[in-house]
Length: 161
Image 1 (cartoon, helix red, strand yellow):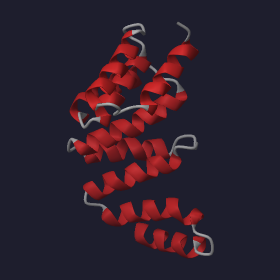
Image 2: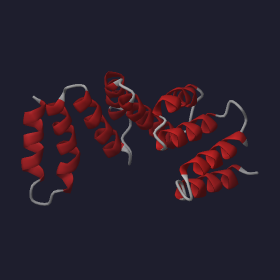
Image 3: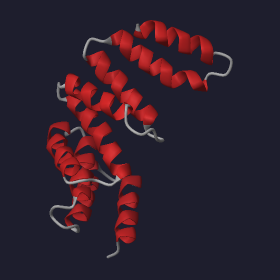
């Protein structure tokens, strides 16, 4: 098995996730993860993602933490932080989710920045910081509003103050 082969099989498993049923989809991801070395962070990440996808966030949280502690590659690392924060929010720890996502937002920008902002807005709202949540969401949305970028950007900054 090559890494490329394994990655392709994981991508196919995710593309069909939930078909025919969620339990089989989780089992498929678990079998793929079991092909890796026991300490491989990708195995922890893929298992966590599968549990997360079926609403088992409490089971996913420690697996995301293990994956991050063991050093995921850049694309999975950022997704793991986003997904860990989302799971933490769902299990009643929105303040920790906010902390993780604010740190992530300060990191090197990439194509997942808007996902970070979306989950940060949710965590802020769950933390009772609704005005900040709306400001974050509007800031992410503003560049996509032809003719209204400046106005929405301004209103987002007013909300954040």
